[in-house]
Image (cartoon, rainbow, N blue to C red; front, side, top):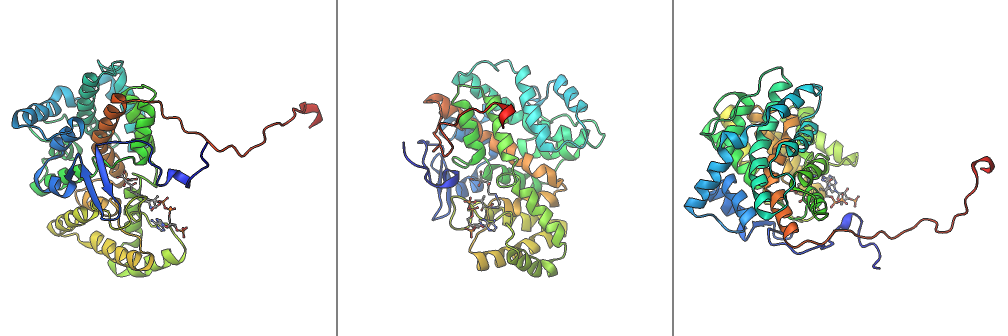
Length: 376
Ligand code: SDX
């Protein structure tokens, strides 16, 4: 048996996959061969979900059918008993706890729950990708004592989510920004939450169970939860004029600065530049440029002093905050995009499966003698 390589499975290659390629040295992200920069420029989140699941860009006819399935009210709507379950939760419950609970509950109402065939898992992938935004938005309303806003089948996934969150039709810039953020977060090779989904799927468990595992992993501040922590840092700094002194003190105190560093990228995360651009445009349109100014100053100091670069989580929250989205909804937004990637990886794992079961290098005792408690 080989000995432990690096902690955290760093640089350990556990399987082949043709869904997502990350070039950590060049700072490139590729979904099924297509550079994410091209997909941001020309595609939509709905089309990217199709690409991840089927491995090819859809024809016009295929795309229209795919968008229709994702947008239909029947697909987006939550079963009334799931909404009733949400109403029983304490209003202080965090959106990620509610999302994890809600996805798990949705399996009890899914007609394909027990079917792990590719066709059934694809149907469930459509339903979960359509229902999770409704789930996040429903909690946003219920925890404020308001009734959930019904999904609008005439709106695309990005616009419909913002509409259900606020009750108002979003601006074109907000819709385009959100659609781009969804494209950028859709997949990322064997990140912690995706690997959690694959380990679950490798036992031949179902998509809902794999997505529930993934949501639990994404919740952590070292992973998806970082975008919320970045915004808490911005709120602590408050004034752009205080940013440099604040970050220099944080670094002097050896603090871990959220939104920076990555297990794979050795240069800036290729997603950060798009999110920085969108947060800047939205901030200028809203007359609120302080968040981005603070982040740019922090990024300059951290990059120059620590040679650690911005990752996907640094600017996303600044864009969401300007759109009026609460900080504790940032990680659920990550999840409503990444479910497209999680589903693609579950399909790939089920398609060529072997149980994922690594070993441990045992370092404990092996022949201890039992001593009765009276003699201890
Ligand atoms: C995501 O894996 C994915 O692909 C994830 C993701 C995806 O799309 O799924 O890209 C999304 O999770 C992005 C990462 C979001 N997390 C954060 O922003 C949290 C802050 N970042 C760090 O915690 C850290 O960079 C990690 C967890 C992201 C990666 O850490 P590693 O590879 O385990 O590296 P490490 O923690 O061992 O750090 C190596 C060195 C250490 O210095 P030394 O102790 O060796 O002197 O770099 C330093 C660390 O102290 N370091 C940081 C730092 N990140 C690394 N120091 C300060 N601030 C940081 N953010």
